[in-house]
Image 1 (cartoon, rainbow, N blue to C red):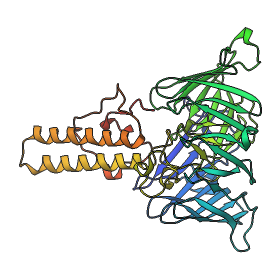
Image 2 (cartoon, rainbow, N blue to C red; image 1 turned 120 degrees about the vertical axis):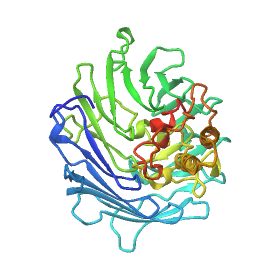
Image 3 (cartoon, rainbow, N blue to C red; image 1 turned 120 degrees about the horizontal axis):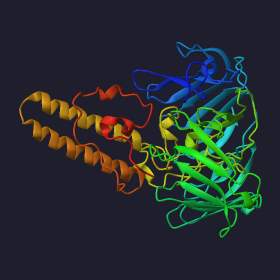
Image 4 (cartoon, rainbow, N blue to C red; image 1 turned 180 degrees about the horizontal axis):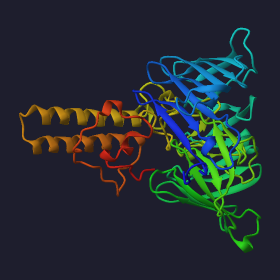
Length: 447
């Protein structure tokens, strides 16, 4: 992020293994202006299926990324389908688990019971319950996990109320976009562009704007800035402007005012539980009613649930509150699993992607491998290899958008010409979704 020397507004270093998995995330406090607290670095460990099984947090070695002083740890034991069989958490990095949890799942991968391991530490969370369509109707409260919400869903499996509307209620349009939210008697109306990006909020349907948003062109959740009526005085307009800084996973990491000064920061666990920090990276509180956080998605402050367009995400549980609307087109094995158990590497802005990004990478890799074989074989002419490559890439993108459940974006044209220098695709890092590589034509303007 903008800066140099020890005057960066924000700077994060990353490391990856040979399989492309992110192995560490090192916030360079020594190079960030005004930052003094250095205990939010993270190091990641994976199983043989490239699924996250451990996150150490604390102070990292600036060269290797290894955590030298641990302040927090989370550990997961996953079953073959990606469900959390066991989950442990060390709240202060002293080497003793403060939560030792086990979970039971049914054949539909629904969590049927959350308990403590025999003699294990920690509080016992509320047990979820599901309706016949797989929607979580008893939802552990993110801020008080021993209690729960009662969720109600409509015929299209969209969450319409929590606790019969006393906690929250929601309305949607015909495109599944949430257009109204009522939380604790506070009403918000949402207005979107064609890419499903919220452009404006109003407290009444015919009233003046209370917030407006500007989005970048690189990624659907690349938030540039937010204007807000902070003093509730419509006479002076949206007087507060804040710019958003985002990391590689598009987590909102800091807020900057029009003078270029950091006003607030955020830190996240691997699965997206957010913490508000002061400008110096010490513990802080939210002074700006900022809702866009983990991966740039909206966190409903009143309920603690995150909306990823087509369905809600529960960061504390690390899974979705309902089945994937596109069924097994998203994931071939688990309709509740979040990004194949790889939250440090993958994104799901639509709540539909699931396995779509990894399928696209595999398809693109196959196209490149086969083009390489065709070209190097010397049996057919070059233009035939190129034509076949173009057809295969087009099919890859068509399958990708079908997997996401969206139409082919009108303005998106993939690069159908093989790059002159063929990359070794099988070790391309998953720093960002595979379509980010410029050899693949860059990111589509997708919803």
